[in-house]
Length: 70
Image 1 (cartoon, rainbow, N blue to C red):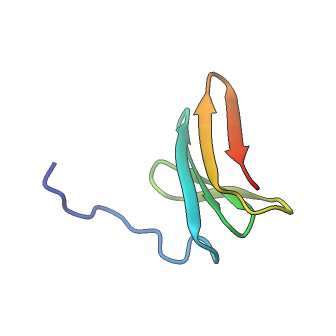
Image 2: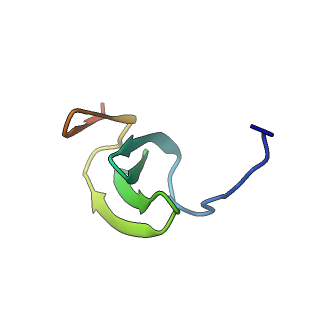
């Protein structure tokens, strides 16, 4: 509400961050380097997945996670 920064995830990705989404109680972040990282809502790293293609965006709907790439 105040616009004050509460938390920062410095160096969370090596590439440009291209998308973020929340799935249940997990924060998902993606980068152009093809990495998907899963975080707790308190910003603790949980897991990561690597793809061969760069990821341009990520979203969730129902019980599914969707990514967009070139």
